[in-house]
Length: 365
View 1 (cartoon, helix red, strand yellow):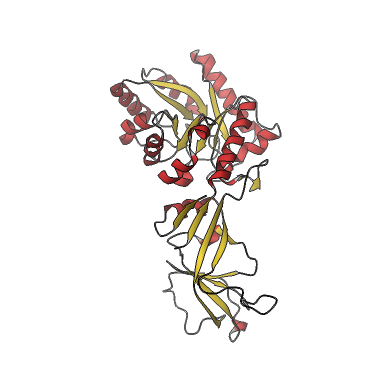
View 2 (cartoon, helix red, strand yellow; view 1 turned 135 degrees about the vertical axis):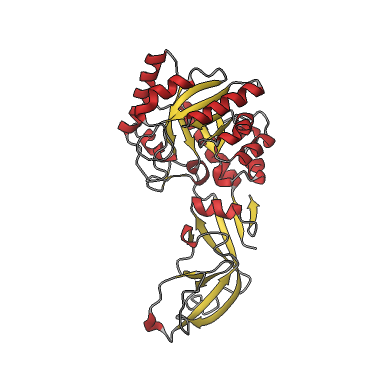
């Protein structure tokens, strides 16, 4: 099987560095683990007691993942990071210390669930700031909060927004400042303090580092920077975080010299994806290797080969073909043979899909 190599020591080092970074700035933060889809082996390898102590809450967008987080540590403070479905209110209250919300009917269901369980559930209400994903419309904000504040088993601890995830709307200083202004408006109207303004993510880390984040933004939800060491705004490394945290190794299961261009009539019945071919190379031949992974495991567009001399040819459901050129070293010996592996770099989506594939070995180092 192809292998996903997970360098847990480097990931934990990133989490510790981010914990110190946020503590120095009096900012609370949530480690968002959704890329791992609640994989219990990962949680056990990464979230030890020392590492958890560097995080205020651990968050995910799936209830199963929150359940697994609590199974690793029953006392862990957790946050459900997408508006929950009302039908799952009981489980949300049971497994999430905090949840992000934008629907009054759902919050009402959470209130009833919290009442039955004899607890008070904490929520952060999300506001629409232009990304057109989750968030209460700004014109409805005051009436929305007025109804929520009357619920006895709901504690509104903050106001938040989500930017950069769907349309890629950049989280500017002015947009984030709006969150503070709305918080002040709500505080003045209802004489209620909202301690958290949740507007920070991995995208906004460089802005915080350069002083371009309003000082009132005091809660960050961070996943990509912790696990990949980068800020996705420009896909650049943040600070001195580790970026070589994952590696994908695929096995060569066939290696033959073959033509560059396929023979026969090309129909629409193919199920794979191929690179663009130059029909002038009809008679040319190169060495091609077949690797033991396919589209069911990962999208090849989310991978990049570490060896610049290896080129993508095509991918089907369970196999991938790459071009090795002459497959010769400088001394004329073969560079690769059947049984060797080829290594790939991965982005966020590649890791997420590979972790969900039951056909890929996961190796923790």
